[in-house]
Image 1 (tube, one colour):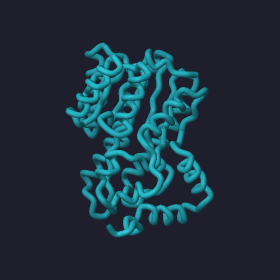
Image 2 (image 1 turned 30 degrees about the horizontal axis):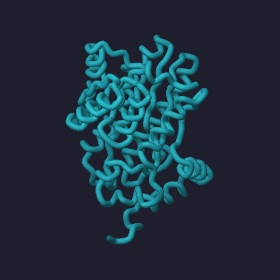
Image 3 (image 1 turned 135 degrees about the vertical axis):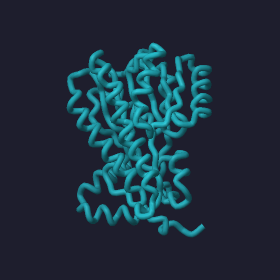
Length: 270
């Protein structure tokens, strides 16, 4: 059943670039009002102004540091003060690094967990009860194909995505019959600033076929509009096949295979 986006107000995290900005543009074009959340206030404000001018929808920009433990309560209070009823939540923000775990800064890794796992849980806890009470709404959690596979050099990032996937699948079962839709969208390699900002060694992540942010968003919104959407949708045929194929391998063989995939040394010297 097609979603009536003109009746939606969607809170979207990580909205200032990449998949988040693509979600914002696609939702605004469909008529949804938006609450955009990201750390970079200048980019967030610029995007909000662009969408107001081009689509006429209501767009609120709320800069926030999603690594803070009080961020969900602060955002809930901020939207309440503006008289906004959030009917959809898209947890898209992520934080990552590309380096061996040994020697990585524990503070940086803790922030990855806070943004990638704790913030989606806290935001869902903040906004889901009202959706259940109303009998409609949706929560989309942006996970990754890394949720299914080991991620050498991105061990903590991959673990946050595995948490997100498991959390979402469990919510999907709990929320059946409530009128609230919840699912995880799992992209593979995608051309975004996030990947580029990981550093030159991370070029190995985009050495093969790469999807665009718009591809991921189309996959997610098509799934949202489908009849009885399941708890997970993987973006891209090759990634769906890849995840399925690894289920035929032992965990040892899968881990060794992913060690090769994530090895910067497999790229030609530049």
